[in-house]
Length: 396
Image (cartoon, rainbow, N blue to C red):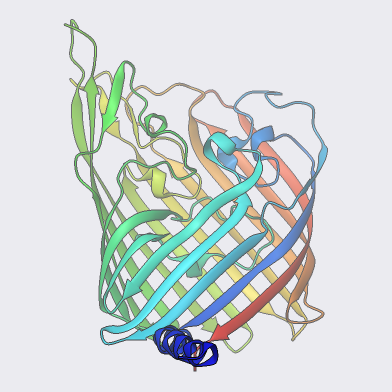
């Protein structure tokens, strides 16, 4: 066989081997998306320096001049985001995946500009698994704001989970088993239980679910959460063993209501006990109560969100609203314990082209302690520049 003949046969085999890959590439669509974003902030009061570019009432001073002095200017690109979604038709339905990260460090990386995973999730048919929004939360309540962290009284948590979605579409139902015990800002587990000389234990996954009724005027959604929290006293032969357990639970009612073609009203009310780690900005799930034999009590929390998004025209928009999170510190809490946080903002955004957003936003936050009479307010002005990009590859 001549050299050219061997080359033709080899090329033929390679072409046959590559054909299934090429066909798969033709079917699969990749959506690449994200944005580069700069935030310029003037903070008129004080805030925890590890959270300089967000407004979280829990991170405001708990006593006078804790983060003195007043007044500071901050710049940040930590909202910058990158993501890839895939869509592949299969015999079992469309296979969807999401991989997304940003630069906002939390937990041990609090205050840092570093890679942080947001979503690593896949689903096919009525089943999904990975890290994504908890069914207990409603991301559509989040307003069109510049401030990154968002309303403090909102349920807001991306969690590892396995989910079943028996009803899909505008009206939907979801049930999930979620990773238990994780902090909402990815801190250590122990930070969610305020008990001395003990270690937390989470023997069962958290159980969450949602049902959304979609209508022409918007939707209404009811979500629920049920979880078991345990703690073990690790001392050797203690005079009083304070090991114990409790059940946490929560109900979250949320809605979007269309007010004509230009406005959307976003609202949420959540109440529960021992669910603080699912809240956008709240302290521990479990507190101390010396009147109980095991010293542990699930702390009740009430969260409220009310925002209006309005489009003045194709180029200008406004978001304005208020949020609150209130903690019922049962038992004998410290006088300086976090009791209530309030959050409000208003903005004017300009979109010269659909891919670009800039604007100015005024923000207010307040922290109120349990019983020592101390309150701390914060006033901030934020100007941001956001440049979006999106690209689709493949598919039909």
